[in-house]
Image (cartoon, rainbow, N blue to C red; front, side, top):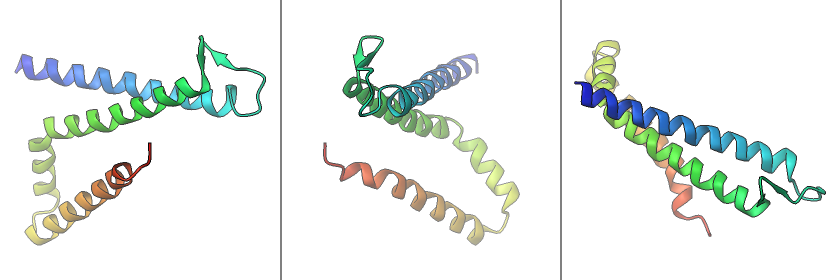
Length: 113
């Protein structure tokens, strides 16, 4: 049990750091070193590097969120079973959630780098 809790805390901490990096880098890109700005770098990193940090931190958030959901899948399933005891309704909700996940991931598969 303690090992499971440690793994969960590590994933949560990494996800928090990735979210913070995504948020901070997004702010820097949007408001500090935007196009046409006189500022060319922040912390010795230019706009291009901040965009890379923003992209990869965002990808890390999505991956870590998937790991987090997988870690708690039994709890999530138990909650759905309690809230939606009618099996066809529960299956419909699962299908909608899977379709939303596919819609969120699909554009990344066809993105030009």
